[in-house]
Length: 364
Ligand code: NDP
Ligand code: MG
Image (cartoon, rainbow, N blue to C red):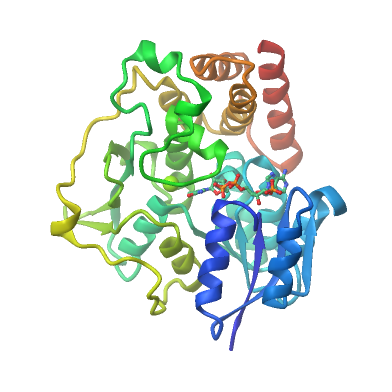
């Protein structure tokens, strides 16, 4: 029997990698639905090539098309590869409909972690991470019922890993978009340069694996070969290793806990790959990291404020309105001005998101 797949954000970096994975496994998967934001011929071509019955863009059909695709009756797994807060509704709708959500859109979990988990429990759906670090943790813990004691997520360190604080503050858009190891969309590439991405991932790990923030650590690993470490209660550690490609975690999110044979991924060669090195995060040079982790620790509506503030600040930087160094300053101002309240329902979370966006827009 084939698995029906919806790909939300099919024209993006993760979306296109997902279509590559599906193309290699025609006996196992059938593409049922795909969406993008802007109407593009590419989307219609992809849909026709796969014989997918549903394709739509937000521009032509409105944001409801994400929910329509995510809840299509022939869909078993929804790959949510939309960037930003725009992905949240579809995550919730898919989980309510009992689907597996293969989640690249980490912003869903950061904004609404408790609500996402409660919706999955009530609707019979499940969240399986695509993010490479979280896929690493899931792969290391699957089949090991032993108590999970600690996680170490790795970070490439981004393009400014060894830059001075002054130089980082004045970094240009072109410099920020030159990621050393991963090819990704513009927003997450800037998030990798500020280390906001790693803070979002710490919050994501907190919800996915049920660990407190003291048990989730981050180390910089410039080669991006070790994607994550897991420590068990007996002190044993496992790590998941491979050359940086998102196609492996995408395939695993579709098949977990099973593994499918796949020859599209270059096999890791430890001698050819050379030494693996690890360093501390330079928290003083990349203040966005601590701001995000503190927002996670504060809980309630604070992570949604961090996420919304970050999205608007990054958009302002990409549009040339603000300097790179203003990104953490604007986020900090929003977090300081916000009084967190419990994130009891979707309207509360969306209001916190709206407030944060308006606060950063006004401060630019
Ligand atoms: P891209 O910018 O490359 O792609 C984003 C996709 O989302 C595009 O298809 C875009 O459509 C669509 N989209 C953008 N805005 C909206 C909107 N408002 N409503 C509906 N669709 C929208 O991003 P990435 O693929 O790099 O990242 C996607 C998600 O995956 C992010 O959450 C990111 O953090 C996460 N992720 C990405 C990784 C990577 O390696 N790229 C690794 C781990 C996680 P259009 O093309 O029409 O604009
Ligand atoms: Mg990641």
